[in-house]
Image (cartoon, rainbow over the protein chains, first blue to last red):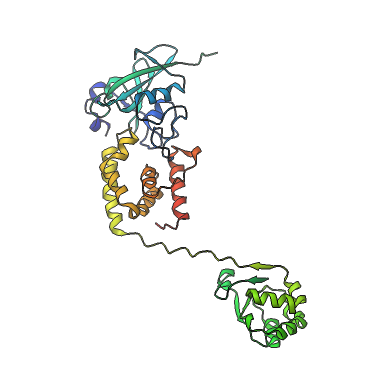
Length: 145
Length: 211
């Protein structure tokens, strides 16, 4: 099913890492929350959105939502020891479409719609479905004691 | 128990199917005898408007024959309640305080599910699920033509949606909100798909929907 949606992903390489579920969304998963849907839709209960972030469909609103978790915009998507990164995707009109979270130097993790989580190279999900990566954000990981 | 209620109130049905309905005779002795001889529990006595003031006074004197170790409910109109209190004060004191009957508006019977609407919903839902399963954007999901068509079904889509939610939680909240305007999901449960579904199912039951 993933390969039907992203025909080129086989060439990039990917691994399915969960069962199919609609319990959480991509941005929730990128934020580390697998208990609920996140989305800046009108506030009628279907989706959670950080109160400090505007309920608007914009990359800036998504960036503010990530900022509530300690993320700040950075330039590079390469892996940096001691940091955790998220990537925001947007379509041709600049509307947010997806978010992914970096897990190590070779992989990112994404919740694909109402399907599974997958581990993948970041650029493997760029294309017709999700547009392209438009912003990278990072935060410091807690220092081990 | 004494209940002050309009004549048309069906007190016996409200109390329970096991209640004995007794239409009071005008003669106090006859009424006293029927209550005394009845083992029913409860007995609901109506038609007390036909008792005269003298009949009430006679019932007051016969009160030991009327009181039972089982429940007796006197259904009284306001004038009868006043006559009981005035002409049978000892009997009134046995019954204690008078309960005022509260009519609740009858809930209209929920219509059977519209089979044509169910078929149409199933078709649109299948299309929507297949074509949006990879989308992360809730905005794009709910703007999908099939989802919008379900919203456009209006009232006829509510039962099929609730039936689908009963089967498995899905992102039908925006559709139900668009159709009904309701906001049943507690803020603390926002985004928790199963709890959102439960909130809408509870809303459906509270509003008389059967699916």
